[in-house]
Image 1 (cartoon, rainbow, N blue to C red):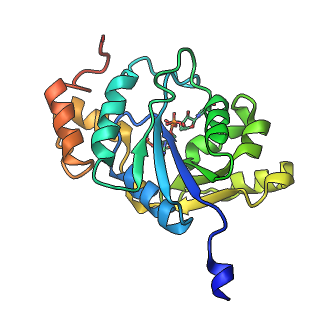
Image 2 (cartoon, rainbow, N blue to C red; image 1 turned 135 degrees about the vertical axis):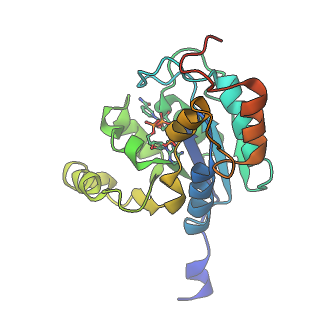
Length: 215
Ligand code: NAP
């Protein structure tokens, strides 16, 4: 392979979408692995605003989740954060976010990174056909997660997007936000599961201490 072939053609931006309630090392490792594997110049974390698909009534307000992500990404110069979704009124549809990002970076190769679990539902997302033309996808999953069925469905039902959905195994995704919330509720330690400034923020504000919080 010549030097010419190994050179990247365009700047590449990763978009890390998630509720991040709270952000933890699994998310950070996934973003960093995606950055390395797909030669991304930057990874932009976008905490969801008002998720249209969630039953949970106790999701922390966007500003608090944003502040935790801000603390988590501060020491990585390749990571950044956007308040695009949490500042938007109404339900948080990914298609609207991606249209804005596409307009902002018309020449960039864009990769949307999220959990494979979330990505499996993409065919139920609003205007998913357009979403699939706007950006490529990286589904992050813990080892052993069976992504084969989903990828096969993509291949069979949407051959036009084959090669635009990628799978990334991330051992650190054994850590989960659900487990962290339950640990805090039960008075168990969360140190080493997430960055210390995030842990301190959770403790200082008494977050997740009870199942239903009224903010
Ligand atoms: P979720 O259903 O809460 O998460 C599903 C699984 O994926 C969980 O195991 C979760 O782990 C993991 N996960 C979530 N985000 C991740 C990330 N960035 N990296 C690695 N693992 C991740 O998913 P969600 O957070 O609500 O949504 C994920 C993204 O899909 C968001 O950007 C959301 O806006 C988008 N989405 C859009 C629509 C729509 O437009 N209609 C519908 C659904 C989702 P943790 O619980 O530990 O995070």
